[in-house]
Image (cartoon, rainbow, N blue to C red):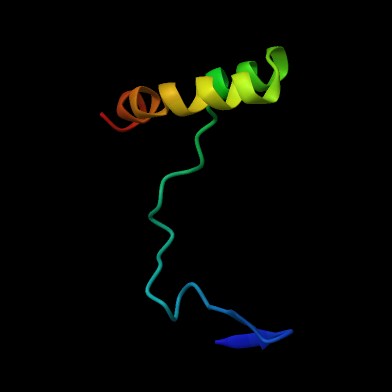
Length: 59
């Protein structure tokens, strides 16, 4: 483990994190909401639809 400015930085291999994690997934509905709605409206849209979006991605 390294320390920079007293913040620990962990080596991913030392901590047992492998490269087998899936690539990041874009949430197009969230991007659209942020582009077309006010911030409070977009936040509500994202939060309310996130469980369904995650279920579609991982099932």
